[in-house]
Image (cartoon, rainbow, N blue to C red; front, top):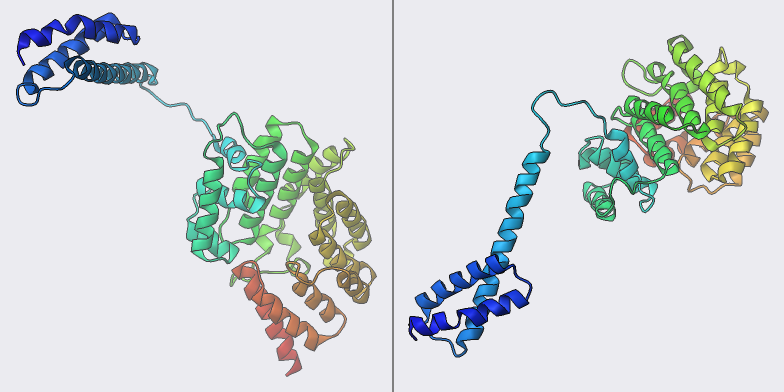
Amino acid sequence: MNEALIRSLTPSVLGVLVRRGADFAAAEDAVQDALVEAIRVWSADPPRDPKGWLVTVAWRRFLDATRADAARRRREDLVDEEPPPGPTPAVDDTLQLYFLCAHPSLTPSSAVALTLRAVGGLTTRQIAQAYLVPEATMAQRISRAKRTVSGVRFDQPGDVATVLRVLYLVFNEGYFGDVDLAAEAIRLTRQLAAAIDHPEVAGLLALMLLHHARRAARRAADGSLVPLAEQDRGRWDTALIAEGVGILQAALARDRLGEFQAQAAIAALHADAPTAGETDWVQIVEWYDELALLTDSPIVRLNRAVAVGEADGPRAGLAALAALDDALPRYTAAAAYLHERDGSTATAARLYAEAARRAANLAERDHLTRQAARLNALRS
C-alpha cells in the first residue's frame, strides 16, 4: 500500500478526531503520528480498513498526548504550590487525626486501636498485648478500621462525643497499661478544652488530672500496683488536684451534668480525703447513682457495688453485686475484695486467682495473683 494512499486519508481522519472533540492542533499532531506508524507497518501487514486503522491509532495518540500534557501541567502546578524555602511553621495535627480516627462508623475499641497504631505509634504487637488478644486478631481489627475510614476526609471527622470517648479510653490505656499515653491524652484534652467551650470536655480534663495526680503513688519500687487505699498520699500531686477540682467546679456550676463530670466528682472525693478511712463513701455512692442514670452502664453499677460495700458494709456490697452479671470485667476481682472484707479468706483467695486469669492487662494480673498468694499464705 503506497504512501500516497495513506496521505490521501489524512483530511477525513483529521475530521473524525475534531468531531470527537479533539483540539485541532492536537488532532493534527496525532494524525501525523498515525501516518508515520502506517508507513512503517502497512507494507508488511496492510489493514482491511485503512481509514478505520488510522482513526484508531490517531485517537490513541491524541489521548496519550492529552494525558501526558495534563500530567505535565499538574507537576508544574505542584512546583508552584511548594512552600518557599526556610523554616516550616510548627503545626500539630494530632487532635485532628484523633477526630478522623474517632469516626462514628468505628466501634470505640476499633477507634482506640486505630488511634494507638496510627497516631500513638504503637506496634500492632504492643496493642495486642495491651488487649491480651493474639497479634493476628488485632491486625485484622486495625485493618478493618483503616478500611472503614479510608474514604473519610478531614472535613468529615467524628463528633466531639466520640473524640472524648476515644481520649478517655486512650488515657485509660496509658494509665493502666504498659505504655505511657496518659500525658499525651491530657495534652490533647487541654487543646480540645481550649478550642471548645463544653462542660463535658472540661469534665474529662478534670477527671484525667485528678487520676494523673495519683500516678507517682500507683506503683511500688518493684513496679507492682498499689491499691488506692494503700497509696502514699504524700506523693500525690496537689497542684494537679487543685487544678482538676477547679475545672470540675466550674463545669458543674453550668448545671449540664455529664458522665465525665460525675466521674470527676468521684475522683475529687477520693482526692479530698486525707486518709483512705476518711473517704466520704456515702457521697461517692450518690455520685455513682447519678452516673448510673446518665450511662445505664453495668460497669458503673459494678463500681457502685464496691462503693456500697465501703459505705454500708461488705455484705451490702455483695448483695448489690449479686444483681449484676458475673461475666462483667473485674466482677470477680470486686467479689474477691468484698469477700475478703467480710472475712471469707478462702473464697476471696480463690476469686482473686480466678480474677487474675481474666485480667485486662499484665500489671493487673500480677497484682491479683499477689493478692491470692497473700491470702493463701495467711491460711497456711
